[in-house]
Image (cartoon, rainbow over all chains, first blue to last red; front, side, top):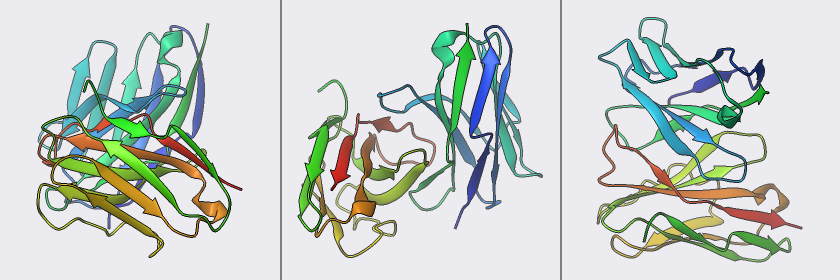
Length: 112
Length: 115
């Protein structure tokens, strides 16, 4: 089955700096890659996603890039703010089957 | 309802007891997932329901775990003879049709503690 690895497990940045979280996947058939944000004590929520037919997607301060050849994708947060502090999970999904394979999460702390 | 609802929010039980966790998906969502989140870990897939199709149980860790869903509504996850390693947050999620690139809507989870 699919195996998703996520790095780093923890990340601290100064407010205003950029943060990058990287994920790799093993199954070349995976074609959908969402990112979920889980604030402390709250439920995970989708913040951005990318499909395998594009290489990059942006939404304000958040961007995701995908390299299908290398089987890795990354989340980029620019001009970080304290409210960006949370655990971020990447995931991969194949066109068949019903599972989302999640990474182990990155705990991001933005220091004011 | 406004979102996915799970109950109880917290459950403390003794080793060997059975527990039942409940999930109310968003009305109209035909797909429902259960995930387990151990402390500091990722989301571990347990089971998936889609409409009236046979559920995908491939993620259930042992035969002590089972889940049911009534039509396209409430689901219950049952853990029999609980063990300490079952301690985790159990998250339920739903989506409209379970399509590959569909957004998952998560509940706030049930924190299970097995003493």
